[in-house]
Length: 61
Image (cartoon, rainbow, N blue to C red; front, side, top):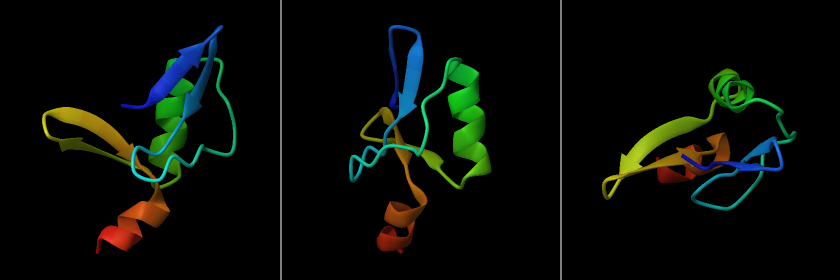
C-alpha cells in the first residue's frame, strides 16, 4: 500500500501512474477511508499490495 507518512502527514499515491490523491491526511486511516470513498483499489501484485487510482483501473480494462 502506498500511503506514505512523512512528519505525521500521510499521502496516497497510485502505484501505477504515480498520481497523488487530491489531499494529504493527518491520520493513516483517513487516507484509507478517502481511498475507499473515492474509488481507489488495493490489489496484490507479485506478492505486494499496491494502490490503484480510478483512472488506472479504467485503463486496465
